[in-house]
Image (cartoon, rainbow, N blue to C red; front, side, top):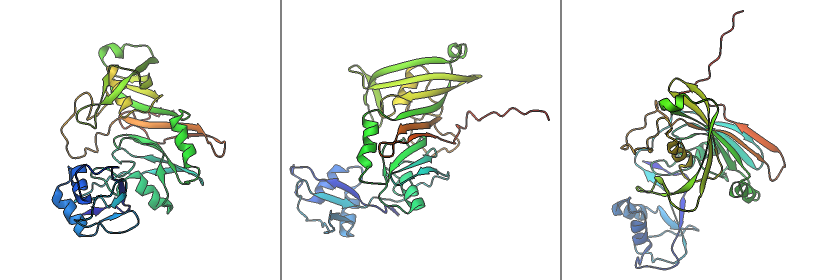
Length: 307
């Protein structure tokens, strides 16, 4: 059994809709976890009010109160790839994560994530990811380590003052293989949740997703793309690449959702958050970070020279 080192929190709804007890609410809210598991957690003293007071099976539902609990999974996957901390000061950390490693706890991951690794490396506890990458995606992640300056870094993303660039590899159709380089697309559409809920889809309506895609190199039937997302919707780059006929290599979600299976470390999604740049809102420094990682399906070719 793997138990999260840091408790999760949930704020109860402002009105009791018939739950009566905290336990009944948790069982209904987290329906993917069987009732017996929640009953055992409560019995073992693993669920409590924010502040430390234990919750038992009969504890009444109290609107808008915060409940804390520790997430547990029977077996937590171990991701056998290293991360790197590229930069650290008194306000931020920039780290580079490998494929398959989530940024924060979720699902079957409770301690094996970039956030917990960074905390262990630095000995810092007040570390928060300012943005997210899918666990399938490798690359740069910005963390805040100062609660006082943290809102300023959130605003960089909210106001579009962060410049991000990704690399991706996709298989090219015969038509695209004939294109002159570079070849560019601008994709604007509306993305909303699909079914199942972790997927996204393009729908009619006001644009909420915008990306610039550039095919910069070709090798046989594969193409290397530079991707610049101007908005930050879930799976935006994956869907925008699909929309121009170039689904990203080894994508298990698009165009077809593949059955869940054991992690295949030999086929990581060929998407890398390569560059991150912004003017620091506290120090005024013009930060420009670049991931040292390379996509495995597009290794750097070094031409040999005769002596």
